[in-house]
Length: 193
Image (tube, rainbow, N blue to C red; front, side):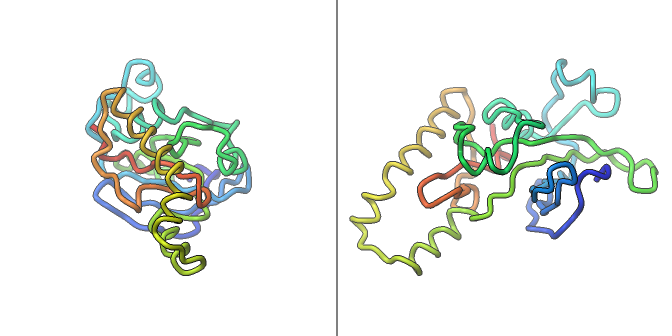
């Protein structure tokens, strides 16, 4: 995409769009690019509208939600910063976002929003649960003791979301990303209301 992101493989698709792994030619790091099927249902705000409004007046709910909640790292974000968790927001951060209106042959195409996020190598809470069960089975009370602080941090992230007047509306194991066994990030805010 734009000679910056080189496609590697598709991760999956859902109601909102597809998620694929790309290599960022600028940093050499693997990233996840979410490509949205539609143009979105939220109006592009005036502050951003100067850049995009002449092409598009709507955008997917996930982009402004993550901009507000996780911050925008832009050029300063790298996988190392992300993996260390030093951003501290509790949400998967945004590395980039953009609107594509032309294809590789410079032909006009239907506008598609793209959202770039770090690739979380360890996957989701769903995959972490399987690994923990297989590698280190623990009695429930020990597992509870070891993971309760992590769950509490995730619940604080959700409380922050609610305090700002939003609802995630799709909390599930596959939408919580595991930087490590004890550091989780909330992601996929496509249904945020």
